[in-house]
Image 1 (cartoon, helix red, strand yellow):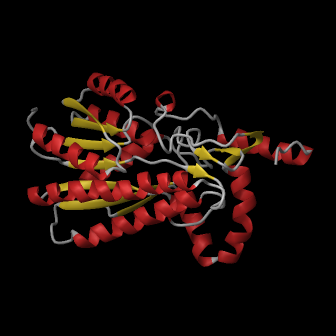
Image 2 (cartoon, one colour; image 1 turned 120 degrees about the vertical axis):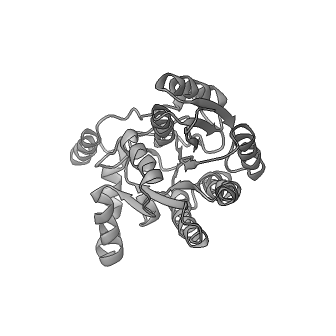
Amino acid sequence: MTEGARVTVVTGASSGIGRAVALQSAAAGDHVVLVARGEPPLQQVAQECETSGAASTLVLTTDVGDDAQVDKMVTAVTSQHGRIDAVVHCAGVVAYGRTEEVPAEVFEGVLRTNLTGSVNVARHTIPVLRAQGAGSLVLFGSVIGHISVPGMSAYVLSKWGVRALARQLQLENRDLDDVTIAYIAPGGVDTPIYEQAANYDGFAGRPPPPVLSPERVARIALQRLDRHRARTQIGIANDVMRFGFNALPWAFDFLVGPLFRTMASDRTTRVEPTEGNVLESHFAGNQARGAQGSALVGIGRNVLAKVTGKDSA
């Protein structure tokens, strides 16, 4: 083991923010443990991490929604490295559709990965951190864990739950100064999660502006390992949305429907119902960034389609 190198576990490491975290952790010379459901994309990320300078890489195919698999994953890490210095939990999936439209198994699949997965990761990693007397767990929420938006009930519920879980864990671990729990809530991020989502809304989702890069979000997450802050909102738009939701609920409720349709979906193209990657990983879609292009161009197309009567809705 490289002396002084940090052992960093990254879940959701095959795509999006998790992939960016893994590559930046590797560039810092960490021992990087790559965790996700699909092995082929993880092996590709492992090669990229080794090229970037990782002290070592370890690929552990794991469904975070399965408690036994998470237990096995943590045991494998501690068996190889003897410790865990940081866990950055990025695994997540999305489903679009009204509450009654999303099939039960898909709705539960979102909760299973996003919320139960977070609980499982905490359940098995926090005892390791506490036994060491040091270490960090970073949980990823979302601005949607602070507000409500139409047609994303499963995701909203899961991210409100992750925020509550993070707060609970922070309270439960206040007795050890060097064991830290951080919560990060980004807004729209340019990742494939929107394209890979389950969809029963009829229209593709997209990240609303201002769209953050996964690399920027990853940098902030890794900074929290060294400069701890319990709760972090990323992007001033988050503050605007949270203010409207809490201080002006009547205005928020009136505006969120039309604004969400215009800014966070593609209203020009119909999408057939799909389970997306909620129930199983889709290897081909696992990339660092999405492929939806400029958010402002997308908004412009939505507005033009509405004005000209070509809106597919």
